[in-house]
Image 1: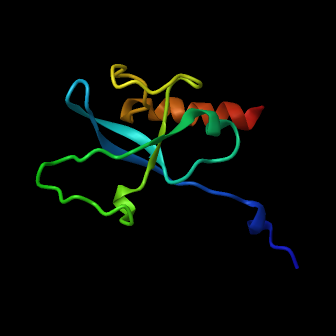
Image 2 (image 1 turned 30 degrees about the horizontal axis):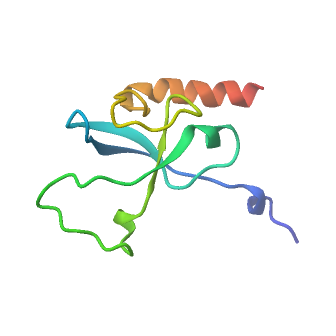
Length: 107
């Protein structure tokens, strides 16, 4: 017997602090736990997490927190640049993010 849940792939969206190295400010950016299939795939890029505090211990490469994150970017196909402040979706973009999914669902 085939379960209808076997064909469904899911991902989780997070709002996580990210230290923007060039401007030395924190941003809360939207991330996902894995690269999703479908239209959002073009808007996701790997991002190595930054150390948020000098008191934070060095993570082992085998530690889950050290692993690569997947950030949702604003402009598909654009290379990630530390000089660009508005390349990641932030908390203020959450309504646009849901609007994107609503538009994709209608099509």
